[in-house]
Amino acid sequence: MFKMPSLPTPRSVLAVSATAGAAIAVVLAILGGRAISAQDKYTVQVPNGLAFSEFRGYENWEYVAVSQTENGIKVIAANPTMMDAYRDGVPGNGKHFPEGSKIVKIEWTSKKNPESPYFVMVPDTLKSVSFIEKDTKRFPDTHGWAYAQFRYEAGADSFEPNVNGADCGYACHTIVAAKDYIFTAYGKR
Image (tube, rainbow, N blue to C red):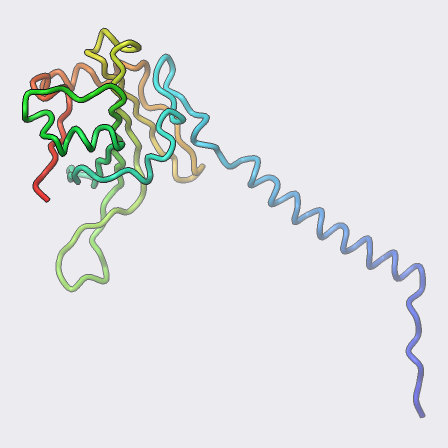
């Protein structure tokens, strides 16, 4: 004999609704907490110096060169203004980089590529992002160049200034004053 299923009672509907509502609230709280805790890197600024936001879009700039340190791998990329100058022979032709030139150095720790059949080192964990900008009106005391470095904190997925002031890299870069204060050469392509 066929038995008709019973309809839910108002009490069971309320219990199911309350449970579903509580589950949704927990999920939203977790996701909301992540959204709130996620840093917008473009809000970070070196005290008395450059802001990350001045370099928006650096992730898509063309590479100038790569370099390796004892503890890491770096890619150096430049904005279109600086890339055009490099292609025109600056600084090797004795000219200076134009106003608005910007360069970024992205550094990672390195590791051996486990899949490669031969020895090759590849980027591992992001360490820092450093910027240089040429603006002689804003930075006349450093021949127009300003410097910034932001250390990456992997656990917090955030950046924090590693230096203070726009002149933080100037002393180091005076070694290459004859190259308009830029270490990185644009290699043959």
